Length: 84
Image (spheres, rainbow, N blue to C red):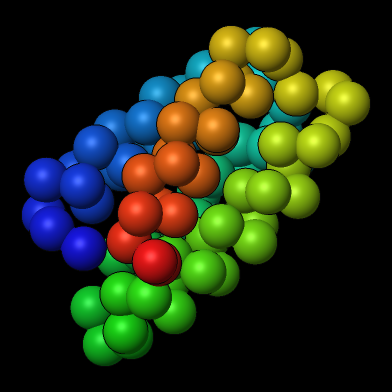
């Protein structure tokens, strides 16, 4: 995973975490995802897969606002390219 890709994902996750219109459980999942991605001691593929799992689950949450769901899908797309 390149630094550019990581920075882009961090920025999107930060946007979700800072958005008060997003339910707390979804902001918490974004924060957890950010922490997982920042672990440099783990393989990037493992980190990407773990975050994909977390974000895939919240993207199906009926309480997630449309704009946040779109951002989650964008992150998932970025991370899928890393995992493959």
